[in-house]
Length: 265
Image (cartoon, rainbow, N blue to C red; front, top):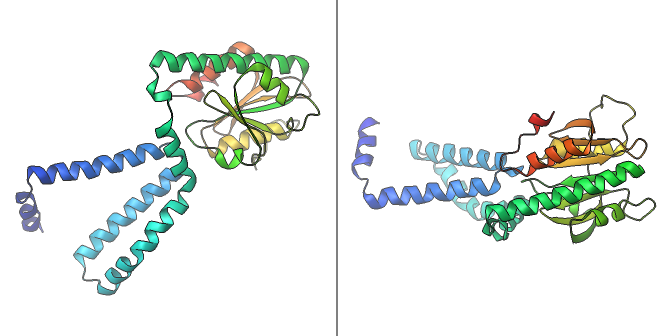
């Protein structure tokens, strides 16, 4: 075994090293594109299984197994885009967005404007006791939940948010989803948590906020219709009784490159 390894190392040339580095770079880029999505664990599992299979087929003379792998390759190549369709769409969107082309100051200015508008809207709705559930998309795509509502694709503004949640309007009961600086959709249906919340008086909006943030890295802002209390949910955790200043700090932390929500608890 050591002799074979030494023979392989002796055959390495500069071109071979560059070839290996390019393949490694491609795998790294793919993992980076899927980082923060629910598919990243599945993708890593597929890579591990593929590595084990390659090693097994090279060590043992598995003729029938090799035949099965060769004839299954086409099916696997067709199945992968189907399985990873939402994540592939999300990855292509991330590649095509113009935000990375902006300077750091430009991105910060956009984030600060979104934070200002969201805080303004939440302050108004809390004062008027208008129930609201605002979900800010993180790195994990929320396309399946967006498709359950009405697409808006409007620039984030306090006026738009308060209008969408105005009582007795068609979309006020669902969630509003924000992606970047756009209100993507309203009236969205999101999953409720199966856990028992510490306060039995908390209603559907709070259960939905916890439920959606249990599955991904989104942040949910809730305004209670009964009390006007402002709450936020992240990672399946609910923090209540925020004022506008603390809400602003939570949102600023969320929009930072490294978001550590636990620092706000």
